[in-house]
Image (cartoon, rainbow, N blue to C red):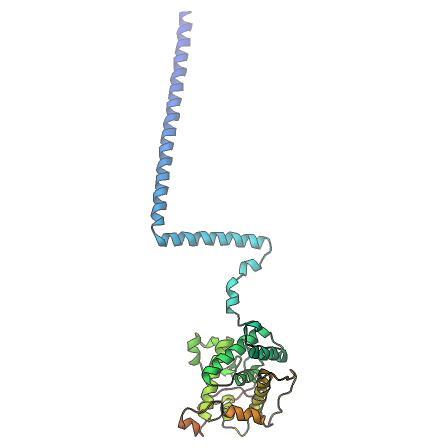
Length: 312
């Protein structure tokens, strides 16, 4: 009996020792884990405080987070078949060459509407071109309807038109000849930006008129016909279309299907008389110029243009 009692006592003491050991181990692990988590937390807080004090680190974190969010959004859009969402560009509207007719003065809006119907193009881009022609024409002392008439004859208001010799854009400027003028607009590819092409074309036209001494001769220089016996009716077509546009701007009713004069016909007398008084040569050499510009070419281009190359 005594031996059995001793055995039971030993078992109880062993079990008690095991419980104490396990409790001590668990308590130690908890204490160590608690301290480790506290240390990790303190390190995290320290890193956050450090990052908040560094603008470059904040920006980098924002970029990484934004890229991750965008990639997740794109993955969801592709999974649902919403392809447009992955290429959307809300700022694209700021690059569009377009203006509401309601934002133009009545005279300009009337002419823009007439041109849009005549050449079957959208009124908003034409409105922007009409407004720009008025603005640039005033600075260059050129009738804006003359600028618009050149665009009509040269390209039918197609900003991507190109002739066989490389005349490009609305006003069919020879880009390789006038590449220096496009430097102010970022380079030669600006030839296909409607506003840039219009501005460069107006500069070329202005130079041609100043050198030639009159609008009619300036147009011959512009088209590259200064050395030729005839211009194929180019000047007459431009001046006739300019006359139509001026009449519309003045409030007269002009059918949108009114024909241009036939090649070789004489320009309307009223249009020519008013044009010749519009821009006077700025130098004696230009007023008496008989030598054509150094670079003259001819070409075939858009539906309303026979010769479209420009003089330097």
